[in-house]
Length: 206
Ligand code: MN3
Image 1 (cartoon, rainbow, N blue to C red):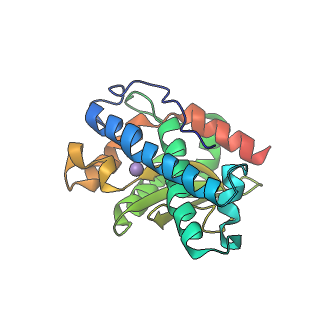
Image 2 (image 1 turned 90 degrees about the horizontal axis):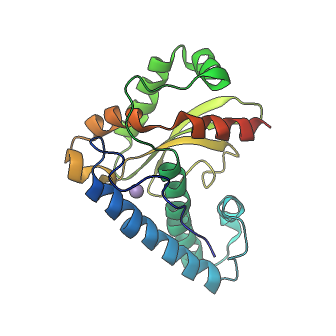
């Protein structure tokens, strides 16, 4: 049985960057539906005991087309939203990581601003629904990428650990920003809980 993370904040905690109605609909409707559909598909296929990362990494080994598609879409939807919601918090100006993660970002991308520009460009440039990702190898090498629909660096077979994501499905921003995806992406940097991202990085390189 796969379970949605408990939101570590209230539905209105991300205002004014992301409004209460968006958070509530996104979490209690979209994310909840992916979770229910994943549980139904995994249970039907006898796979519901598998840790979600393993289930997604081994997706190609599921022989039945319909089950594989259902788990790609709903397992990705379940997992990606757990990652997304966990890493947000109330808005903060001049929000930035520090310590080892900041050093690594500076070393890899030149500066934190340059990193944000590059990841934002992937988020804004993802054609249609999808996600932008920061992930890393076991040796801590950072990588930026994007994915369509509910794919992620695990289902894409990269073997990398996920550190940070931006959801660019219209349901993530349309009530607050209408068609202005770039404005949403620009604003979401205020919400990133860098303590969560730093913990993911520390776990990935441990
Ligand atoms: Mn979403």
